[in-house]
Length: 96
Image (cartoon, rainbow, N blue to C red; front, top):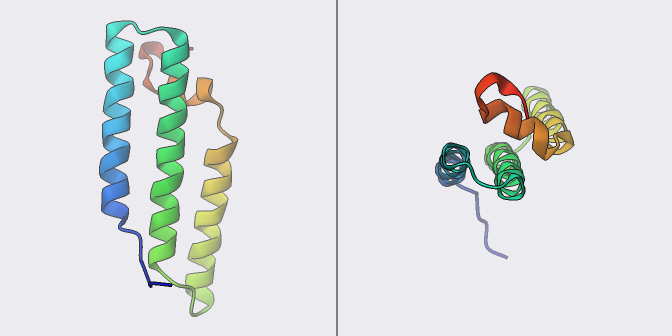
């Protein structure tokens, strides 16, 4: 197995494109189904960014273990978000 370290910058760039796509869909008045699907893609993109950042730093001591666990908690919070919550972050007025 090759030793591959994920590049979080690529994941961040992809997340930026997904967020821009969601904003564009909102501006164009896309259907609710398309908006929710795009919101889920943004949520999953956020998880991928944190996971890639987490995998860059192997846990070798207690301080690094604490950072690893903090990132793991952030992933759990992101995974718990539903599409409407993510979408409300991007809608004007913040209501879904």
